Length: 272
Length: 246
Image (cartoon, rainbow over all chains, first blue to last red; front, side):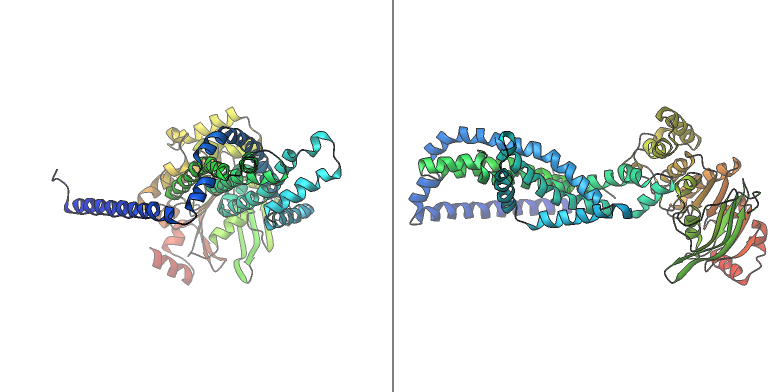
């Protein structure tokens, strides 16, 4: 027991002390909230319309089912985003003068789609394109909603990839070219794999944001989670379904955020 | 037309970075199987000269003749010549996301179009030759500096180059690791490889070089046999440099 060195003993004491203080501080804040919030004049009304257990119980299964749409839209958008983002990032990296238009296109693309609020694009594309009078499968809000998400997110992810490509040291390019590898092979085998690996944590943040932003499509029609909550809100004149929707989103985004943090921490600890 | 007796001829080679003339009218001819050591202070133009020969740095004027063919014509595709001239860098520059085997096999597969099984067999043989057989599956960050540099040499050799350019390949190594890398260079020389080596290892240069060139301010100030260079240098600058370093 007493083999602990004086330093270790001191550190252990300090750790216990910090833990004690942190716990006490957290508990007192919670107690204060618990005590004071219900004292607000509108508390009973808020409780009725936002934290209504019977309503939550009744609507939650359908909300969960609606969330499957969010997952589906997310799942088919993500690979499309990655592919388009890679293409745009490569466009911005071409050196050949004949391909200069591609560079301009890449730059314009990222400028435009990063410069406009997503919700605005959802409206413009989601209502605008089907407004052309397209027939059955081609006027689906699911289709044009997906297109909007892919266009917007690939602009952000393309920039992440591009900065990754530029962060690979030029000595790697020299080593590759000195072996006689072509520019395309150098990009494909030497630069890109390092760039992508380096940017995985940054891209994770966009993956998380995408999962939430799928809800924006509710404005143009798809009955996904937010839309479903909205329907229930109108039906029951109660906001509890919104709280239910928030809980469902958090159940996915919080673990994903922790995972992204973990990836970042791991990357920082790797020697370079 | 240059005579084709020499493997590599540098004629009045000049390379500038903006206002700075890094290589200033270099003339040098290298015979097949010869080993040339470039010595000189940091910034004297050794590394840039090697990068110019590998066509990594475009030259401003002069010529580089490889087997009597001018490879320095502006606009010429450098790839066919680069695969005939291997270069190894001071900082190894292995590809960190690839295993030793993948590092070695990438260029032979993609550039020479040799089948995977064949390149791997060749890689194993080269690795074994330089005492690295058990490292084939390792990644570069698990290797010591000396091992990484030996892998970098093997990677260049796998392209079966006619000339090897070695750019201060021991300068980034801990002193106790220098020997293993120099042993590899010695083995290369014994196999009759044509080598141009930029180095600060004077004892090694003296031991293995056929000729030693002293560079100063982007010029070759003096070329001599190692005995002459180290025991009886002609130029004052050479004497000063050797005096400082030995």
